[in-house]
Image (cartoon, rainbow, N blue to C red):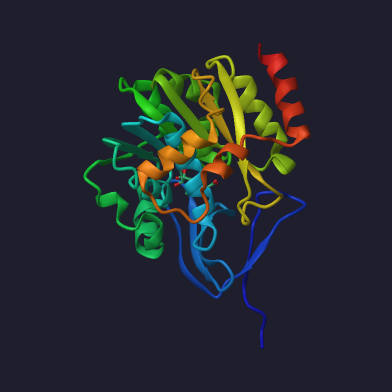
Length: 291
Ligand code: SAM
């Protein structure tokens, strides 16, 4: 039997992962990307942009739960949330679970990603785009925060790696814009890569972000298809206590939120801010340069 076609991820040059393609569901050039969505019997349906795996049905819940419930429950009184990127809708699905949130603005640069993920990855958004609190804006995230006069309690940058249109979402100008759009105790979080493979991206974020906020740190979780070990999320806020809340308070807020999760727990939330020594050292050395 002829071997199955394989999808080779090209994020890293000398190391990577492949997926057997059981069936290619969609492969097109969209306004911003080369978008592929295919079936893989191990990971379910997989979506990739320009050769880089973005999300899979099997492990997306880890990433989407940790990038939403950690900042929202740490904040404790979030009413307005901004998502930058997030075209597959998984982030939105988790944010709309929080009934106390009044408005959710999502700024995605490529409407085709939203449309195709609604069609081929329906469980990602699970109807979240129809929530009356959601305002979907098809635009560049940098341009949006540059012109935005609104304030948000939580800003989530669910971006690609710093490639193509995603590059600006790791720029000092973007971080300055997000800080300006944060309310007083607002929290900014962003996907910031796998430090074992992309430690320079962590240091770049520290150098660019730490001048705008009182607390610039990271928290971690392991998402199987983001290869190379645990990934980190950037954490930026002027509320220096927000990442050191007692477990009992996180448990109480989680209970009150009454949301179902498959990965997030208050204990994991609290533990996720503990980083490996080599990451702490990289953050510290970048911080000295920044200050
Ligand atoms: N979970 C993925 C990861 O960690 O790499 C990210 C998933 S999500 C598909 C990334 C989204 O960011 C894509 O839909 C992409 O179109 C969007 N995006 C990239 N650059 C953008 C920009 N400058 N403004 C708004 N959205 C952007």
